[in-house]
Image 1 (cartoon, rainbow over the protein chains, first blue to last red):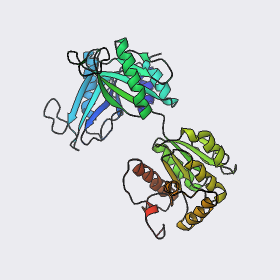
Image 2 (cartoon, rainbow over the protein chains, first blue to last red):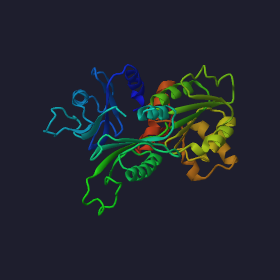
Image 3 (cartoon, each protein chain N blue to C red):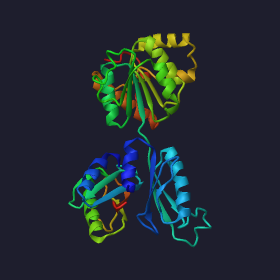
Image 4 (cartoon, rainbow over the protein chains, first blue to last red):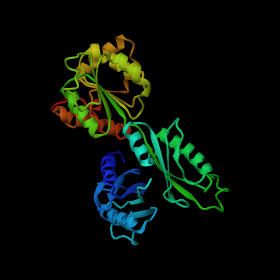
Length: 105
Length: 267
């Protein structure tokens, strides 16, 4: 979170709507530990990362969908063997659980 | 002030802070912010849940752990209390202040090491008794540059040093490195590295013995010659070998440290 504060502050000054995605859990091998965070603004601009670049694109889509649907947030899972919901996964074979939430707090 | 603003302020001020977020169950997305010694801000939707989860989260913060914890909607934690209730899953994210690295000796290696340590997120303190060398201008990347001797620094700050922190002694001057080693050994700092050739280290051990530092368990804490045996030559490469040694020892990996090898450091 520390490394994305400056971008978030800038977006807040511009009154952009923002979504924050955080790794809350990993199973097996995962590129980033719980706490790794990424922010997406309403224009699809990105700061930070939650994996080694494997799932960031899907997180942006998810974040924009959360803004569009006024969702309070959702838990999303990405895994290599995951045949549901998402066509992207982690090449390292692990599973990451993200909580993606609008920054309204 | 929003919770986010408060969180950002505390993170930037290096104050320990923990953020709780409901990621599953009733009140999804609710957040609460806590730091030791101050009232919690925000709410998870139930005062008893707030109390219990804050108490647990402050414990996690103390340990520097980030985790997911499960509760009942009113903070229930025993399995029988949780039988007929929905589970509230809370992401407890601990923001600990950055680890510290205190570097004794204001030499070329110091600038390179301070730079690499900053990349790794350390709060870096450079200390040397010679005021012409210990200047902010020579070490702009350091968080603090102190013109003083090791003993007062380690006396004043030693109690704050723990397993995540490091003391790197880069002077080759016994006047300076003997008290630095002595002072560092009196703390719980996780890493003590001391620069110098094998010959320098052997002489240093004699001087340390003269001042009573000779217990095997103390000497075992000293990484000297400092760094991994990766054939570093430049100050920058040496800085990488030192930081890699710190990382490896923190997680308990067996890696080729110079201490465990023999022969010349530079082949």
